[in-house]
Length: 78
Image 1 (cartoon, helix red, strand yellow):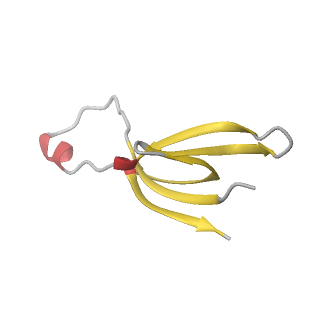
Image 2 (image 1 turned 30 degrees about the horizontal axis):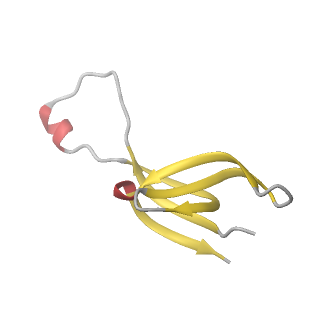
């Protein structure tokens, strides 16, 4: 059974509203928290399955990739 992890990360976003330079300078990533099966961790980031894991076929569903540069923390659940 793969490990289950919680990843806290900062996400990109887009808005169509007008904004001031000051608002632009104060802009921060949107905080996200994702829970999933840890499928792989490589030089680029983490690959999670956020849906299901089939032990019989060793197949996952709901692939999500989070690049290292976006990650704030990774915690393994027990």
